[in-house]
Image (cartoon, rainbow, N blue to C red):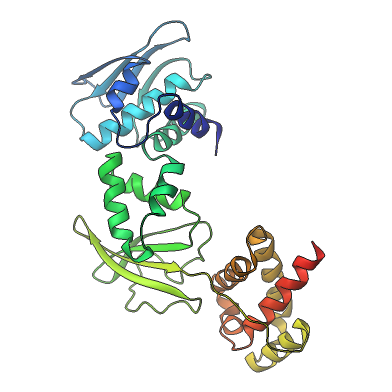
Length: 310
């Protein structure tokens, strides 16, 4: 977590809060809050941040309630982050000049953590079956009162579970989200998708709708590989490449394997192997290798050798 996100987490811990909670009351502990009409274009204004006096926080009453809440959390970020001094006029969609833009980004990350705490999201996700992601999403939005877009962004930034989610319209990908442990999808925004079986790694595919939008989601499962081939991983790989028909893939196969192992080596053996499978899903040139019947034997043998080396 970045420093501003840690600060948001500390504020919640200090006040013993988790969603749902009264954000207006929380902000009022740190600033004089009022909602009013603005004679200019802005989402919020905070005046008088000097570390000595209670600043004034003004929120534009003309914007949506979800946007007001994010702006309110954003303004609290300006108050709490110690190097934010002075007056801030906040435009959540603005492309600000460099130094001011950095502070706006910090306040946005503070706000996202305040409204959608990382620990709370992970704990809440553990209460649901993976195929019930739509219920998880609906409850997160209901409890946090955050916008759907803000919830999606924070969920997929926070969760460790390997998940890809695509919003689709007339079978065309409008946007997609992925967690850091999920492979990159083999489709792009604007492309049409018609089936769920894009991935060879074990996974569950679910379709759901939320507030009039349709989604496809892929949740990858942990797999257990049994070592049954008596040969070394090198011998197994030679056979795989010979049958795939491209020995030039040797270096890229071993490089992808090594990089994936480094990323997932903190997990147990099954977790590491599952992470390796997903890493190969992201490499178009290696899909033939990854789909070979002996690929699992290469992976388990290589993982065990690397773990023995420490």
